Length: 63
Ligand SMILES: [Zn+2]
Image (cartoon, rainbow, N blue to C red; front, side, top):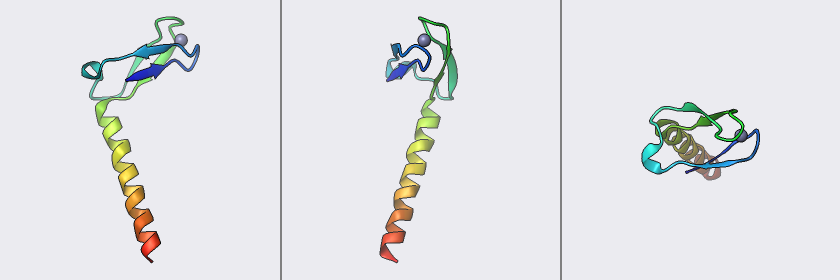
């Protein structure tokens, strides 16, 4: 996955097997600003909430 530093817009590439389970804060290699690395669990919960939103939309459309 690609992580972009919000401070200097430098892209950092993180291979999928190096993504932590929990969300962690890393440091930008260029400007040392803290960068939030979304963990696999966090990404999963985002997908879950998205699915819930779609389900709610379906219920809304049917009624
Ligand atoms: Zn930076």
